[in-house]
Length: 495
Image 1 (cartoon, one colour):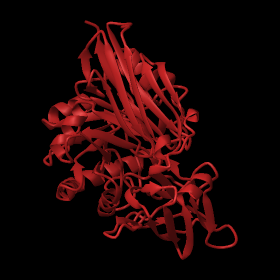
Image 2 (cartoon, one colour):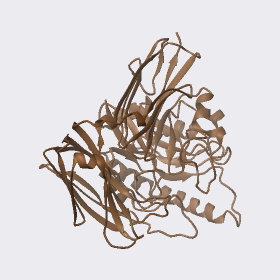
Image 3 (cartoon, one colour):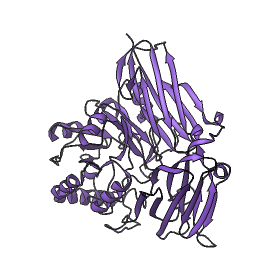
Image 4 (cartoon, helix red, strand yellow):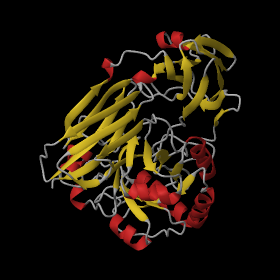
């Protein structure tokens, strides 16, 4: 099994979003394994047009019509982008005050654009290989949040639990809702859906509205599958072999009695195994049983650093002014080897059209997102950033390299003409920052190295005490940089 990373709910200029579909596909290919490109298609119970609602109603209607007129072209472009290196899915979105918003997902390149009043009707009338995924479920009932009494597990095997809107896991979860659609409601969150006996898996996606699938920090779907093909990924999603991350690509393996996340099994004795590889320093790992913490791993207890092996180093870029800024970077290792890397590029952020703001309909996120590990072992990257919107809304991008070596391994950094050199031993003790100019400047930060003794973790325990006819276990992982993973439940019925 392998973990593949994707964004199956994002928007661009094919409806009332921004940025061209072609640019969105390029951005997705630069750092994802799979993606859908979601068009806003319908809102059967939309508000009546009044002076107060006119702007909202108008941009929705205009966007819906745009998708209708270009659906064949959109569908063909998405189909042609599918390849062994990058998998595409077809799909579009239905807004609903009654059922909550859902986006359709399909591996069928002939997916028809049909108009119905409910997600179930859409799935029924679109043919095989179609599911409907509820998203931003935590909004007020009747205000485009989910209605758990109308949830259909047969059409919705997975639920989107995190996006730009915030986190829907529970009332106390990090990342509350702050979009103008309102706060999250306790009645509509993931824990309430599970408490009611529903069975579903977890995914995340960005819900980005400016043509940048996979924009860092807005949510990604992790799918555990045999291979990177449409059929393999699709079958894994149907099996709920999925989990959600907020941004960092945290690797998670979670099994009960050797059955993967998302499974339904029958057992009295439960052998629970989890393996986690973080991208940053660990805050905690929580194994939940029936929504209550059952086993906790605290990151503070891991202080030792391996003297040889693997280490992770993050380089973050951005800050400065609001104009677009180009970064050119490289890292070379002496007496060691860069064996892997992850990119966390972030696009210019737009969540929805606004009467007071305007954006370039095609070029808004036509920006650089390049990375490569060369044959001689040098890691190179290029990306564009803009200044942070506020002290609480970062627009930075970052890369994380994995280095194999020992404490004497030296890393040589070249970033926009600035040079820095340090051994792993030095990077375990100190990070480094530098600025491009002397005042209100674009800047970069090289973080302290994280040894594998602080990013590799395992849980291996037994539970022989069934509590209910069906107990369910799920896993949550938190890093100190506020990046999370939410791993789909395993449902265990007693014998």
